[in-house]
Length: 102
Image: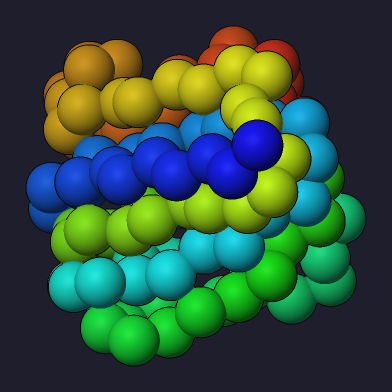
């Protein structure tokens, strides 16, 4: 079964997801930054950028539209954090950082 997911991020928003299986991601617009718990480097995405991702936890920030797709692409958990949801000038609360263990 082929899975396809489109996500729109606004400036100042974060998206955290736990990929159950490997997947591909592409940036259709905007500029995004991706951190993956199983990869040693971070990635900057601009329109047209594509990347194959292993299963694991990822954090995406920036603004734009991205697509996840793959034969068995599935997400165990995901969290979408809107700008300022944890209080003044903070996008992620310290307790939340502990829970994702990036």
